[in-house]
Length: 130
Image 1 (cartoon, rainbow, N blue to C red):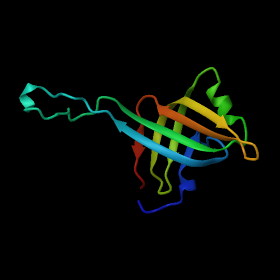
Image 2 (cartoon, helix red, strand yellow; image 1 turned 30 degrees about the horizontal axis):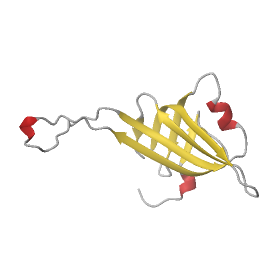
Image 3 (cartoon, rainbow, N blue to C red; image 1 turned 30 degrees about the vertical axis):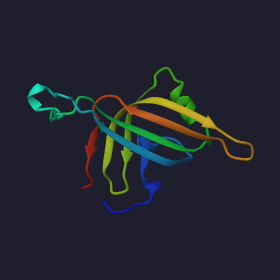
């Protein structure tokens, strides 16, 4: 994948961009290693070849333009089903996420801004660009 414009990395729910005003997005893929070190390893750490816990976290921030995020994180359920992270080349991550956090802040003379985090819940599917 070549260089692309950050605004073209999209976070969608049901094929619609999750909220207005996003200016920064970050994706973290975690494959927690399983330590299997024992006396036979001569003091060197050893890991299982498979991850113990796998996760994908989405962090994003921007200028607050509406109440979409507050509505999503204060509803009866914080589970957001069918989230798609779409890259400019057409590749995607898809799955369910928990609305983990939302923060808003503002200073005198500036716009109110937000920071939000979604944490994967269940299997996440990666589809490479075709």
